[in-house]
Amino acid sequence: MAVQRVWDYLPEYAEEREEILAAVDRVFSSGVLVLGDGVRSFEEEFARYHGAAHAVGVDNGTNAIKLGLQALGVGPGDEVITVSNTAAPTVVAIDALGAVPVFVDVREDDFLMDTDQVAAAVTDRTKVLLPVHLYGQCVEMAPLKRIARRHGLAILEDCAQAHGARHHGEIAGSMGEASAFSFYPTKVLGAYGDGGAVVTSDTRLDEGLRRLRFYGMRPGRYYTWETPAHNSRLDEVHAEILRGKLSRLDSYIAGRRAVARRYEEGLAGTGLELPRTAPGNEHVYYVYVVRHPERDRIMEALEEHGISLNISYPWPVHTMEGFGRHGYTTGDLPVTEKVADTIFSLPMYPSLPRSAQDRVIDALRTVVDRL
Ligand SMILES: *Cc1c(COP(=O)(O)O)cnc(C)c1O
Image (cartoon, rainbow, N blue to C red; front, side, top):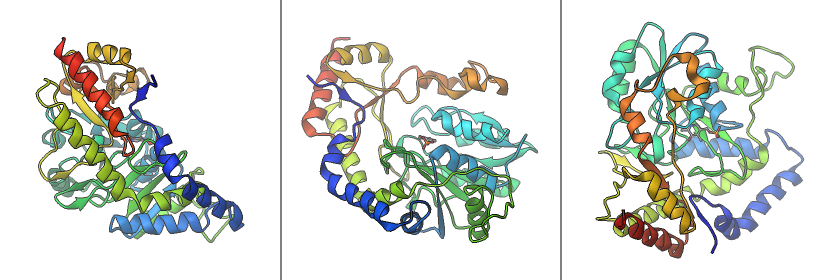
């Protein structure tokens, strides 16, 4: 029996192979292998999808956050308010600038940033609010916007898990000064390798970002080094593949929602706590996170059924060794820590076969019933 994993791209590749190979061939035959028409067109199309003026393709989501913060003026010692219940790269990006991550806790019902705690976390050193639209739904933005306006702060949205998600009708990535996206293969819009983008409608930020991803040079003025920076370009091949996939993004999201609905029906009444969509949100289900006090026993038993589940995320960032120098310890963010001990994620991707999903539902029902 094949092991069912939480994510798999092979069914999608089987369906889209011709188009993807044609995209690769278009790039290889074009005569321009770096920052050519593929990146330019993808940037225009991705910006348009968000109703934004600009999108800047970069090499991955971590650098999208880092360059976004840098373009907003974040440097050593500046504070960025975010959450610890996130993928480590959110915090890696802050750390890479010598800036200081300041964590607020999450809400117990939807695991998103507890915006009631943000005002008290603002200090003279705060520069940016960095909400993470986690698992596929958006953080409550109205209170963040109020706090940002009052204190003159910028908002950078971490949209790595929320391509196409909406909040009171507004699309994720259009609600702050800038937003950072990842196209890591598992994401709702995924490349066939690494990629990322920063979306903004601020022309000054756009210019800064184009320099920051290109050694600090202004496009068109080569060999003039204006700003200390690295190389973080989006690869032309991935941009061309992403263009085709962007045209199908809404149907990928519809596929994810169909999988979520099926879980909701199949797992009702089991005692598993299923994901809750916060008011005003349209969820895109990057991951399908459920909760149960006997999480570890359930995961072990599912493994015996040939179903390999995942935890997003088992160890809150503030408790990890690598972030120790920021002075947080276990106990500082009680809800985040409690959530991390009880959540786990079920297989979720738009091409998940129905039969495979039924197998997961049946196994879960059997296992949870016997606890
Ligand atoms: C995936 C992810 C990132 C990092 O993206 P990469 O492309 O892997 O660098 C950052 N933040 C969140 C919330 C993510 O899920």
